[in-house]
Length: 443
Image (cartoon, rainbow, N blue to C red):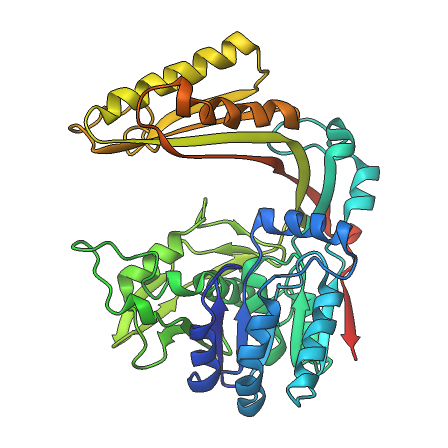
């Protein structure tokens, strides 16, 4: 049994930087490198891509990330866990395998599937958490339903010898808990250790957030060298004790303040942080600095899991039409407000059917709606956006804004317009026994 496991967080979201992961693979003395790249809406978008191309539907940066880190991971014995499989873990794993072969490497690559529960969920027709309505109320608009898998299948893949594990929808902390369960042989009803491992995963899952990235606020919470922000490393012992650190010389900071901010991130009830593996309890956690960029975190616990998995349901929910135009120089604010009034009047006159309408002046009231302008701005940008049931009505929004070039106040410029389909997310739950994770080794 390993005495201490070192896990690095190579990404906190799909579009994250790649260089910090390479730095971890080369200099982090890691056992595992984990890439968390799947937001709630991301997998629904990926399902849409897969519908158009059965071989697609995985993370668009998968290939770039793997090409960048595989040589160093192979040289240093670092195993990889990632949810970059998104809607198509098997195709993603096959692509990773192919890239490795091109680089002259021969890792065992496994895919974890079973999170796609759309078919079974449709038959069960559960209630949606946000609306209280049944799933069937969405009709044909539903395009995806993915359950948040736990650490079990990831640990099983590693137990079977996988050096790279590619999942679809899995709970973010589970990506880190899986390697710990594998390395230490923790039982899946050892609630205390599962709770501690979940805390480690929670603190690591957002990568640069805990090393000062999202933390930074100049003059209030200064962080050095953000352009070279280092990503975190968790040193976890067999009892689940955790020390957070980063590669020496990398940018950013890890101290009590950055760790506490991440500890509170997305936690509604610190005593009951529900995950597919455990109901984690962070209410007695202590955080103390034990050296430069080294923070010790202890005191997490856990109770029996609920026996159900959260499911993200993706469905199509109309369109958003948008138009923007700028006004600059003397009287910019007044001209912008007149333009806004004209568009609102035109939409009423022409009878464009909209479900929701938002018209604002960026820099004046676009973030804090209704806020008074502080002084006269030298430039404003009008933005009008509306949610509609059909594409034609959405297109009319941008058209009305663009027509302001000659039909509106003087000096408008830089008009843009767009239409996009709305992909909405709802939540529901499925019994643990109705989800069957599977591990497939890809060769």
